Image 1 (cartoon, helix red, strand yellow):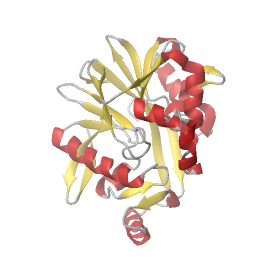
Image 2 (cartoon, one colour):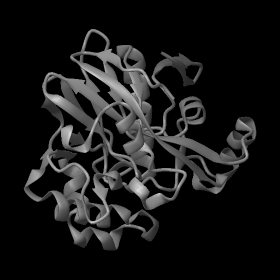
Image 3 (cartoon, one colour):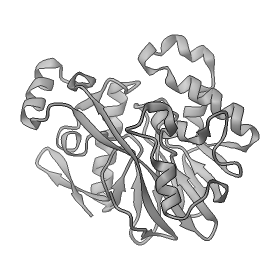
Image 4 (cartoon, one colour):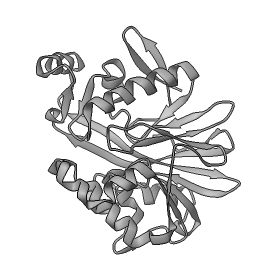
Length: 272
């Protein structure tokens, strides 16, 4: 994992390594059914899902901004390392002016909490309004499968600990030089943040979880996607747009900074 700040637009950006998430292959699905899934996994040739968990620090004229916050201690010893990575970079929690949340899943938002208190006592929490609206409304729980309901508890905790410091935002500019791009499907209001500059950087949250497999086979999804068909549409569209715009990309489960290159019927993520 990179320990070097890189300049994009008016921000220096640092990847914060929160740990490694592992799961069996049965968390993977394919839009064309089980046979297509099995063929894709045979070509992939890996015995399990093993992916990095990242968040990001942005350093600019407006202070320290985070994009996502990692898991905190909630998901075991293999994760929750982002606070140590921040400390190593010389960032203390009180310095964080704002946290831009891509979506309200635990591995992106539970790091907002330190036990029963807010980890970032001075931070504004910026979150896509569609995600906050969905998970903040308990009537939506009944139409959400049990294994995808974690966002409701996360959102309730964000409300408890951050209160009037929460700012739900619509698509478009959310800070000078930073825009929210909606990427629905993984959650109702999932989005990515584009850091605009001569060389732009898109931090796309969970548009892809598996850089090699899903770039070449966008039809592969994960059981954690709230709406698999919409997630596929978002994934294909953002891969095409990132390739066309020559954006650098990274995300919650992408190692390092990458470029998106067309490769036959799919794409390849090459180190940037």
